[in-house]
Every structure is written in C-alpha cells, then in structure tokens.
Image (tube, rainbow, N blue to C red; front, side):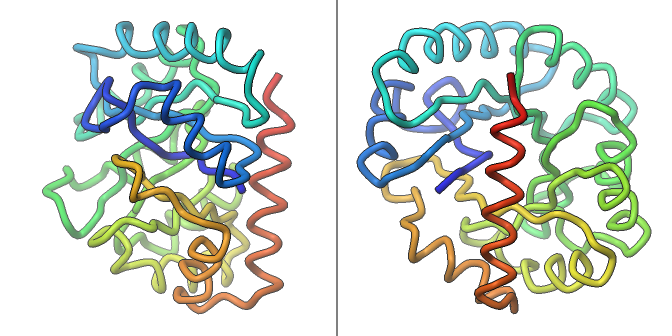
Length: 216
C-alpha cells in the first residue's frame, strides 16, 4: 500500500506526523506522503517541518514517510513558480488540487498543473479533458482516483480517459482523519468501482511503487 495524498494538522488534517505514520504502518503501508494544503503563504512553513519529521520518523518506522505538499486553489498563473519553490524546499511529492466538481477551483488549474515539470500528482481532476489526459500520459503525471467522498464522483470518467490514452493512475485516500485511511481492500474497491479490472489495479500499485523507489 502506498498513498501519495494525505493531510496532517499542518493544514486541515487531525494528526501529527508521528501518529499519522504509525496508523498506516499498522495497516501495512510501504509509504505515505503527507501533502498538506499550501499556497505562497505557508509553503516554506510546511515543507521543512514535514521534512524534519520524515528524517526523525523514517529511522524507526517500517513505513516510509514522504515529504509532500498540495498546492490548493492557487491561481493557475502562480502554480508553476510555486511547484519550483516547493521542490527547492525539499518536497518529494508535489500534488496540485485539481478541478474537482465539489469545489470552486479556478478553470485552467488542471492544464496549468500539467504544464509544470515538477508536478507528480493531479488530485481529483474532475471532468478532465482528453487533451489534458494526453499531456499527463506524455509527462508521466499521476491522475488521482480519489477515495474521498465527493471528489470520487468523477473517478469513472478519469479512469476511462486514463486507460484510453495511457495515463498513469494513483489511488489515494486524501485522508484528513484516521477513519479516512484506505485499507488494502478498500483501495482496490476504489479502483474497481471506477471500472478497472483487478489486473489494472495491480498496474496502478506497481506504478506507484516504482515512483516511490525512484525518490532518492
């Protein structure tokens, strides 16, 4: 089990990183990214603190904590410069909060995120277009199948286009509380519910693992 999109108390999550990591360690996770909500006001506050937690906790946990961030409701023209800054600050996983149908995300956010060289995951991208999916496929950016209520409404649309155009998918919880973490069985249900086969879900897991192994 790997999850590339979760939240701690550094944004709107409930847990400190230590408890966050321990709870998924018990669930058998190989790795988890804490990707708290950020814009230009708090980027340089969150990333160094998650990085320090990762340095401390990874010495004592079977689950690897990845340093992440989620750029959230950032105006599209600012997304690229903030992804570059996030990487310089030490973010290993850069997520952009996509155009979910549940929130008033600025139009053009999906395309702005996909145009960046530093984005790893486009979270809950809503009714993403075929052209945008083609870009994600070409650049190796993960499109998220969300386990979160509401954001998950367009999972089937995302999965259909991803399969058609060869884009990589990631099943993520977007967890904010302990009850949000996905069990192995529930993660597969998220994928199968989006119309994927068991073999296609295995490919998702393999792609996510390869990504984590590629992080130095």
